[in-house]
Length: 158
Length: 158
DNA sequence: ACACGACGGTCAGCCTATCTGACCATTGTT
DNA sequence: AACAATGGTCAGATAGGCTGACCGTCGTGT
Image (tube, rainbow over all chains, first blue to last red; front, side, top):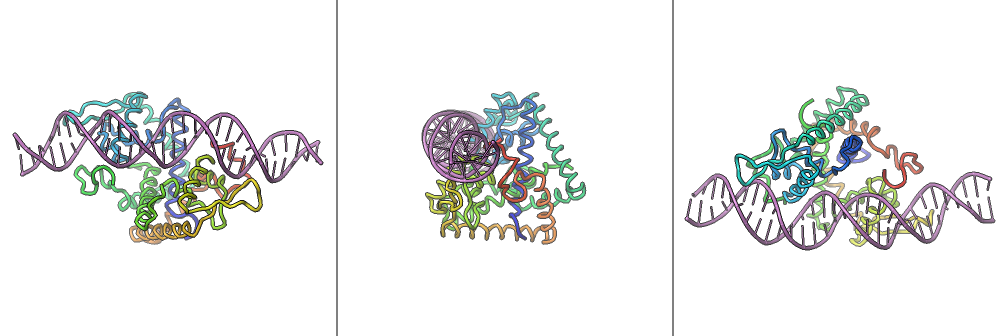
């Protein structure tokens, strides 16, 4: 049990993926787009997602989420559409350009994971994923889907 | 191979440790101290470490590292001492208060990892650590110790 | 022995991401 | 109908990160 803590080890690997994805999509011409925008964008669902949900998922305040969505919108990756089920809310949806970007990003992720499979062996990568998934049960504040009516979440972030 | 990417899974767990540590040390009275300061401070060695090395380890520019060290110094966690072996350099060293903080932080880390051992079982946690350590060989740009004379690192930062 | 490139570090200026606090409109519950 | 809760925005502040320019010291090659 020497060397960096498990948390640091995760940090190293995780940051590596992030960097790889950012570099690769930048090389493809998506050279605006910051890390924060990407982290938020990654949480947008097929049918669109409310800004508040994005904020929770990305662990930022709704103000910050709004700010980032503004930029994604100005850059043409997403658009805000009225939520038909609630006049207060608006759905953040991908545009065609946004969907292209998402596809490209996922492609890079797959490529990096393939490298990992080469290095560790496919079964051991699978084991890693299983362990991390199991760990999520006690580390993810939003475990098992977006908790619509959560007793966990306080007001904004606190 | 469904669900979040492996990178995201790591992000979730890693962020959890970070938050736990920050909250716990804040509760102990170390309520100044930001995340960025902590990330840098975590890289300071027993004998003191140069600002440039800290910058590399924490993946920020040396300017940013200097800025963070300033704050840690003003808060009384570290002090800068001349490096006896190089008149250009200065060693960032922990003060007594800094060492106390470090001990406290490591204690929390141990506690969190103990929770993980409870959840996964000790051998499986060890497996997780092994896999992550192995992954580090292909994801850590500064693999095998601080590369004093690295051919990897360009001028400042990519 | 010394010139010169590499390195450790700082200063200055800028921008992004984040926060808190206040506020508005709609919803849904009582 | 009143009112708390919810989705979202506006305004203002600050931290943390970047680039570029610069200074002093080190170390190597000739």
